[in-house]
Each structure stands twice: as C-alpha cells, then as structure tokens.
Image (tube, rainbow, N blue to C red; front, side):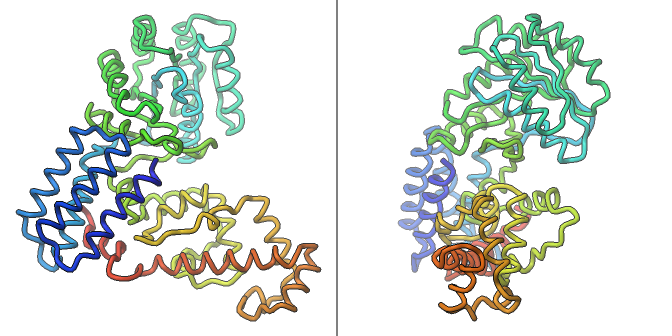
Length: 439
C-alpha cells in the first residue's frame, strides 16, 4: 500500500516539478493527481476533498516565503496538508506504565503485543506481559512463545477462563517490571460481552494507555471500531498492523485521523522488531521520497551501539567492497533493507528491487567470496577483471557469475547511495527538506 501510494504521490509532484510555469492550471492538475492517488489508497473521499480544497486555495492565494520559488511553495503546502491529513501521533513515553491492548480477532493484537514489548525492551526498560485472552485457543501459548524469544516475562493460565482473575493475579506478579502490557481477547464483531469485559479489565488495571490494534485491511471500517472502543475505555492511541500487504491502508489511516485518536505505531512485518513509531511528518516525508532521517538515526543508535560503522561513507556512497560488507551487516541488524532505504532522502530516485534482495544467506556467500579477494581488490574493486574474477570464484568455491553478481550489487548500491547526497536534477527533495525544516 505504502509503495503504491508513495509512487503515485511522487509521480504527481514530479509532474509539477517539470512544469515551466506553475499557474492555476498546473495546480489544478496536481490536485487531480493527488485526489486519484489518495482515493485509490482508500482514503476517505470527504477528507480527500477537504485536502484538495486546502491545497488549491493555499497554493493560489498564499505568497511564497522569501527565498522560496512558487514551485517549492506548492510542494511545501502539499507536504503540510498531507501531514494534517494523517493527524497527530499518539503519546508514547519511556516511563512506568500499564498498557491495555484492544482489538478484534485477527487484527494481529497478540503479535503486536510482543512487538510492543520488544520496542520498550530496546529502549532499556523492563517489560512484562499479561495474557488476558481466554477466548482464543492457543492464545497464551502463542504469546508466551513470542515473549520467550525476546526474553520478556509472560503471565497467564491457559486453563483459566476468567480474564478478570488473570489480570488481578498478573498485575502483582509483573510488579517488578516498568512496563506491563495486557493482551485482551478479540472477537469477530463488537459484541456487548467483549466490550463489557474490557471495561472491567480497565477498572482493575487502571491502564495509563488504552491502545486499539487495527488491521489496515479494514480500511474505512476502522472508524467504527475506534468509535465503539473509545466510548467504552477512552482509546488514546491506535496501532495499525499489516500496512505492508493491503491497498486499504489509506482508509485505516484517514479513518483513525477522523476519530482524533492518534496513531502510536505502525506494524509492517513479521519479526518482533517490525513495529515502527508513527511520526506524521516522517511518515509523509517517506511517502514523498524525502526520507525520515530522524527515524533512521534512532534505529541506528539502537542497533549499532558499540559498532564502528562509518555512516558518512554510507551517505556519500564512497566506499569499497570492504566497507560495503560492514555497512550491509549493520543495516541487516537494523531491519529490512527496503525499510531502511525508505528512510533516506532519495527524492525521485527509483531503487531496483534487486537492491533489496540481500538475504542473510546471500550475505554469507558474499563474505566467503570476499575472503578470496586480495586487499587491493577489496579496497579498489575497479581493478577487477576476468582473470581475477575466475581466480576469486575458484578460491571461494563459487561460480564466476556469483562473483559478478556481488560486483553488480556493489555498483548498484554505490550509485544509489551517491544519489542521497544532493539528489539529481531540478527536483531535489533533500534540498526541499532543508527548506521545510521545522515545519
């Protein structure tokens, strides 16, 4: 969903950037392109119309700030209005707290509970989880397994059918933790019994946060969920899951924004680390190809502690095969490469899908191949010729084609990362972000 929406939005802005004159006709064409992109992503039509009118009115009536061209002014307005569309982020603080998780069955609530535990754990906090889902068979076993993998304590009793009793016993059992997360049961519909149970659990737990987990595939129907749960326990944050596999994610985003419940996290993968703090400006920046350097730096600080990685070399794109492998190892620890690259301000650069397909298995093959290279070859890949490639292949027990694949990947990454520094052509999103600074 994000890939398709992001591509459509970037295409609309690139079309504007190519205009010799930005007049009423150019603005109206841009607005139509934006409308098409957002409606295809299932964003609420009413909100799309409001956004369109705001962009059109501001673009035609507001004077560009000093030092900003009309084109840059319009792009800035689009950016600001898209940020307004997705609403404000929900509050997340690193302090002692109880968090109550709500949602329908199938929303990914249990998996998200473990991801959330991992998020606070990475921030250096002691975390405990209570399984109060007594309805779904295997719920405790699933949550316990997920928590065990990340070394987080999990309280529950698969034989106990009284969720309130589990919470009453679980809270003192988890008192040694700074953050306690309660996973509640979900149902196929918003049944009165489910709502009453979660109201009673909240009375016992006095949770500081009540977060609703929503499957992005629900689209605009998410608004009904948010409203009902909000009436019951005053939802103060929303986590949207499965954003990587649906065309309706825009609907979930806009529906939640309409209810005024801030989005706190977005889930888009299967591992315990695939939960991302939602920041409206960073989220829109990435959709527009501007990157999200704040999120990238935060991710790097968490995963690269104590590691010697020359980030400046990575951003410059000036690195050898030796450097590339060190950086790929570091990036691999940070998460999926595609997710990391989306945080870089690549502007309108299109990164080939092949550039993302570096699995840990392939990286291991690359290591073996590079072990057969001389220091000269590692530091200066330009010396590589046919005879060297064959010698390296024999030494690594690989085929010459595998060695060439490694070299192709190296050249592709070098070219892509060079584009980060300054962008290309007139449509320079990195420069635009400097102008947007603090907005």
